[in-house]
Length: 167
Image (cartoon, rainbow, N blue to C red; front, side, top):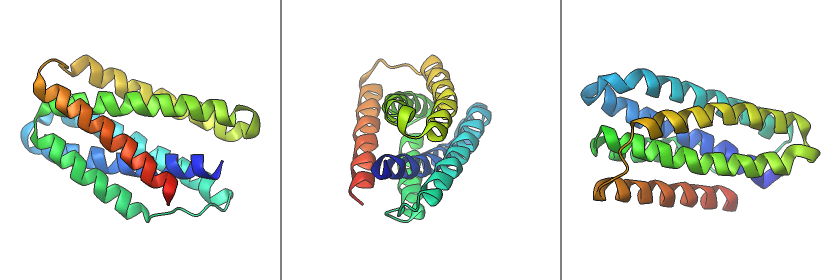
């Protein structure tokens, strides 16, 4: 349970950074994206707070400082952002797809063990599914750049999960 909560908490903080980075670029070059990205960022901040409370209540060490997760997310978000509007949507759709699979696993894990956490996971997953659907509807997944961004999103997501699990 400790590992599961620590990973989710760290990855939610990373997500706040990713959306922050995307928003910086979008405000300059793609202003139509900003309202959606603002809402997604707000959700991720809420999720980080919710899981942070569970981490605190269970007396679990946070591993690496949250600022590092956020900073790594910002760097990733800025990098993908400069690749263009479609790259932001492709990345968001892919990362949220991975997040939703992870939340499915978390829900199964917590269902019997921790009903309160289980309920929170299901509520949070509603937001994450919304993010995934919004991004998938706006993304064009064809083309080399989209495939590379999707691969990058996958590799970075699983790398973050691995590091969070090891700290």
